Length: 431
Image (cartoon, rainbow, N blue to C red; front, top):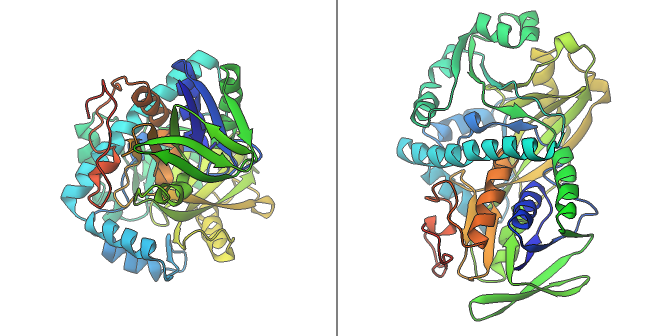
């Protein structure tokens, strides 16, 4: 089949790669000059299936109030007259209970574990390199309340047989030796040995080159204007470079996916939540992290990427605003300098932000739509890099009419009630 993929971030690029591997003729369209130039460009670098969890959970509304009052807050809300913003927040609040949390986390872990396995296989098959490390993640707890609160996550990890270790302070220092320099600032941690790290941008760029070797055409610098339909099928996409036709289409535009979907009368609760990062050169290798340390207090990930440290975090609900705010940089610098004071040269840090496409329940939206030849691959939130390969592989199977290797429960857009027409599941696929 001839397939057009809309979007060349890590999700669109992995979709294109696996579609080409399945034997399809694939074209990728994106407004940016190269692959991976938006939200995939400088994210935290975590491939963390063990840390996959929805933001909506029991106790989160109360925590959110406390976070908003913190000097270095992990959450920032900039209210606006935006119905989608308020609708999304209300839906997220509706998921802030134990039952929903367990269901949503289970869905996310299922996909994320599969995705990590797909990434490992891809690396073995192609030799792709992207400053990768396979040394796990350490979720670092600064107080006993955080340590005790890990019990709920551990129960889900046990359910899905995800390996972990609950460490005391000495165990954290053994796992991340540089933490011995700030002894007393933490009480323990949850170590997830199956997690990995790597530069998402490098991966996306290099996978795009591999995809080109399979015949995929990347049409960069091309703006998508509208989609044309006849009955329950898409017929073409109108772009700044003209009208393009295909047999099937994949919508993988991250936070911008719902804007285009609305043209077709499709409403999906994907909303941009801005995240920030700084990237600093390593100043003292012995004082830098070995892998990823997740500072639970500030919700900041501190990741080693080769000779750089990537520090990512903050959830800023402000619509499609891409302005860089100094207060958010201050939070990132505070976290990394507090835990790894000798590790990186903050004076040479590069500051960045990107729009994470978040769903209110945390799980991405992958699969069929009411249009029989339009498929979604969006809504991955903070876990696009973690879930990219698995999502691309599942998407390629669905477009090809093959049953994916993992369960599809809870991944389709029809898990949300609303005015959408019924989805059209491909023949040969059982939801």
